Length: 177
Image (cartoon, rainbow, N blue to C red; front, top):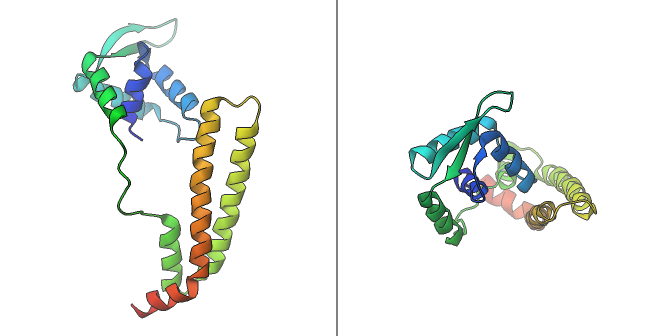
């Protein structure tokens, strides 16, 4: 996910300070990793440097001074171009699960036991996400994010089933290389 473009998107409806941008990000993307404040402010500084955002003023409201930022016309144009680009499917998948299966085979560990444990972890996470998305108070963004995560976890589970079915052949292939 492009933090730069997400922040530009959050600035699209008006000026905001870094604290508010972080809070809105974490609300709008509930299944994503929360942004660190340092990441927000570093990204804002780069957006200003690149002419995609500018300082709109400061406010203190009795607390520390907060700088407000707003998108520039160039920032709006870059955001529109980014939204219009399709995301290219990656030609190679770097998957930790696959890597652990191969390394388990190489080291004499039990890849079937690892796959069973990983499957259990995936199923537990899927139960959590299902509970989250069926909560009547869940925001639509939360439901859609959970749906996305569930789809990916389901694909992982299907791959794990296929890998478990092919472990004997994979073990023979990896062991002879």
